[in-house]
Amino acid sequence: MKPERSASLRADLALVGIAAIWGFTFPAIQLALRDVGPLSFISLRFGLAAAALAVVFRRRAFRLTRAGLVYSCALGICLSAGTVLQTLGLLHTTASRSAFITALYVVLVPIIGLATIRVRPRSSSLLAVAVACVGLYEITAPQGGGFNPGDLLTVACSFAFGIHIVIAEVAAPRCDVVALTFWQVLVSAVLSSLAMVSTEVPHFALTPWSVGAAAITGLLATALAFCVQMWAQRETSSTHVALIFAAEPVFAALFARLIQQERMRANGLIGGALILAAILLSEVGARPRSRR
Image (cartoon, rainbow, N blue to C red; front, side):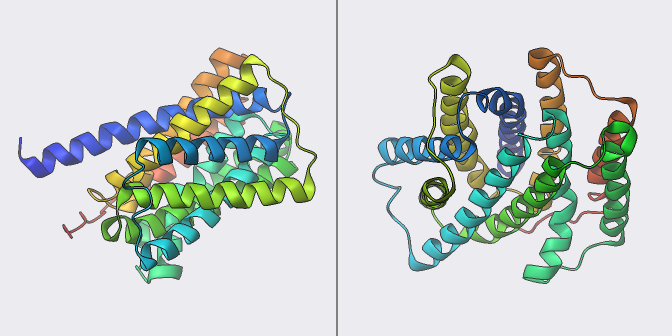
């Protein structure tokens, strides 16, 4: 196997593993929120991740250029905004619905790319947006419980995560992966902590789910996951990364079924299938990214 193909395969397999971890966090966080405030949980999650990165990569974590710091701040703002919106949304919607709605960021990446870095989307990407909108309607249709506040917050979070992926494609080849990950996580920790002390009485009951979910989301779903994502985006495009991350809601629905015995209605399954179809459609005719 050629070195480039081997590196690309390793990146793809690593991203699938990250998608599985992120899928597990949907039901895990929802159960943890019974015992902890949402912003308290997010602050602890990013605080743990930043501390772990600083300890494990103490020599590389603080090596950042001025441009890298700007990228890290932008990534951190998007990451904290998306995580806060998603976590607050889980207070009002199911884990499966949240996962599929969050996955809309995959379809939004080409559109965001047009608005930010002037990459013109293909016609298939525009069609994918239309299909995804139909899928979103099916998931949130009146027979499925209607469009609740949690769904609206989750739609907003998908925009934040879409912007995060587009910025990461630009930043990852130009910066040290570890430093870029550490500083964006640190920025997220600071921003979520400020939001917590401003709007919420800190609350964290030590229960198996609250402690376990904080450890998993902080160490695996944040510190490890974003190191892997920053590394992988040096080997592949943001759209390809987004396509692999489409497996996240599938894993989330599976874990929600196993852990919470959660079942999606027929229209929810149809909507989820349409969103996944839109994600695949957005990749039709995608051009391979040139090596930098």
